Length: 232
Image 1 (spheres, one colour):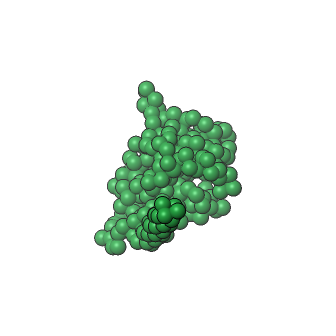
Image 2 (cartoon, one colour):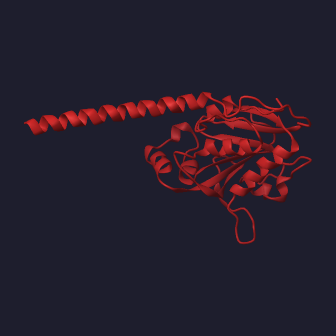
Image 3 (cartoon, one colour):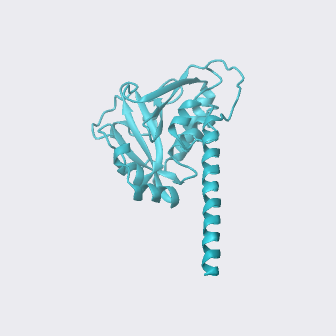
């Protein structure tokens, strides 16, 4: 009887410590959402290039012009082959990165499955880049745009390019149709996890362009909240 009581007491103690640890971790993450990585910027000149971020509620995506005076995606991606609509008239391309199984099987919050989510968070799994083409910035999503200069814009482009897995002749690898006719999935580098998710990737790309991001960038809403550059 005494042994049983001691065992129950220890279980209760460990359970209390575990509960406190969970609460502390959640509190730190909540604080990290509201703390920016940068508090001030040096003003910049010649900021005439747009970087836009969309928020689907799960994913944040980077929206860029298909071509402008500093970069042309037609030279690096078969733009007409992105979606099954075979259009090469996209004025904008949206880029998102994430776990392959989760991204390809979860077009919306309503499609979330516990097994896929847990596997993506806690097991090393292959990743993908999701590309969508648009004639204009989509008005059915939350979208926020900022200005950057040429150097920072090209740094962001370089980061996105480096995420693609390439074939033996240096071409991007399309691996599946997207959730809409204007989208496709591409093989990517990097492993998705609870510590580096789709929104973390977006934030990493933005930091390459000297754009502000939250201290903890795991939520798309947090990325949107702190979206700011020295050009603003």
